[in-house]
Image 1 (cartoon, helix red, strand yellow):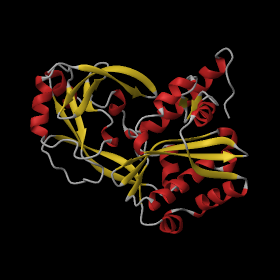
Image 2 (cartoon, rainbow, N blue to C red; image 1 turned 45 degrees about the vertical axis):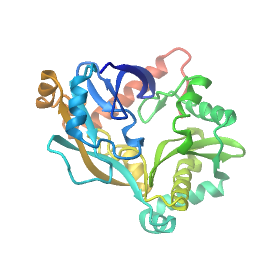
Image 3 (cartoon, rainbow, N blue to C red; image 1 turned 90 degrees about the horizontal axis):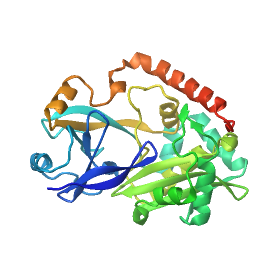
Length: 321
């Protein structure tokens, strides 16, 4: 089975990687030292991801795709392990959609409710919008506001119009875009992809210059409202915890907006001797996976300081908000 190649997004950058189609699923391989194979856009695919895991892995081993480990998960709400392969717990940030009123009254702290009301009082209006060139230009302006976000170099900063349009046009047939406007200026946006009965926030971002109006809180409130109207069971916002940084600002933001952590199985199957060794040495999650949890906040703060200093020293640097 010969391999092909596809384009994937890695930390906001588009890369061409080897790929192979197995039982209707595109499997890609990426990684510098340990090649990890995974199903492309695994969390956005509908239906059963893998019908017969043993058969799927056998076909992968027979293909020409060069990979050391195959990583795959169960669906986020399939929380009971189904396979005997080596497993670790993955996680997602979810809001169960019983009703928008239930989320508002029982899941949100008073401070967050005030933030949503504050945005409305200060003129923030959130609505569903068409994905046209005017909206893309608004996204581009948000991307290019600042080169640093969440303590690291912002990977969308400096992209051109065509790149931004292409990257945001995936899954358009089951996507919905929300725009947060202030005096006709797009100051925040969200992209929702519908996956069966779940709504997945693929991206949500606002301008720092308008952070006092809390547009991101308003976007989440609108996403919950629309999810209820569409009969969705859950709203998912990527991971609840990234790596071992359980005390990150992003995790705290999600908690304050009513998201909770959902754990589900992720499997790692060695395909080569190197893969077996990498699993034994716990190298399958990169060097960061070897860092004890207690050191993560220190490392994240140090990284943020590094990027801040680096940007300031760069000729023609843009001041961050």
